Length: 299
Image (cartoon, rainbow, N blue to C red; front, side):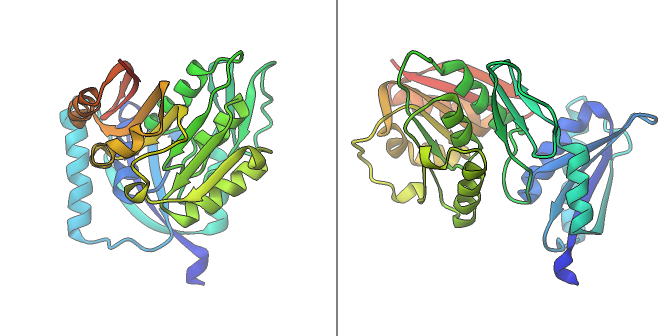
């Protein structure tokens, strides 16, 4: 019976704080979040679903409350700001995603959607089908969305362009790259479950033969590489990006672009300086909530 249960952690808030609360919960529990807007009251409920009951201690509740106070201190209206925990059946969780996870268009070029959506891509628009899950991304987090936009913006149909996805997770970036025409596309992740999920998602999108997935710890990757790529995506925490800078840059082609994400805005300057010291220059950047992402080229 216990295995059929999930635990739902929710925050009831105001619409203007929805993104900030989403980032807070995803950061605290390492799971994708969903949101529900009550049109009648204007109240938003942001929730994450975890497979094991969290240690609902006073310490955890205080940490979440502190996170909400930080959001409020930034000038956003929290609304009720209520935190709750409840158990639900897995089938109920599955159905709830169908209400909250909607198609996401990246311009007129790329459409990401869940399998149950009937939305059709526009003429010339590439489609990626990806259902949400407990441990992988769906493209809605600001850091993943930035990487997807760069994949689209940098693609040149008249050119042969390759792509490396470091820390692939669900495989969403690698799959989108393959569907957009990047080749070859390589992707790795330290988590074996992520690699299995990414391969399954690639099969579902008909690009399994176009992507090489493997399990790899970035810290043990060879410092030199004969294979270099037109585009390298690294959606990783700032400390790992800086510590493994040499290994990452060994795979970036002379005319290539490095897209880095997963960086808190307060840490971005330090990361930027690290890569500029190595010979790169910032060519594109975006900040949303507390996250900042960047695209770099060789000078």
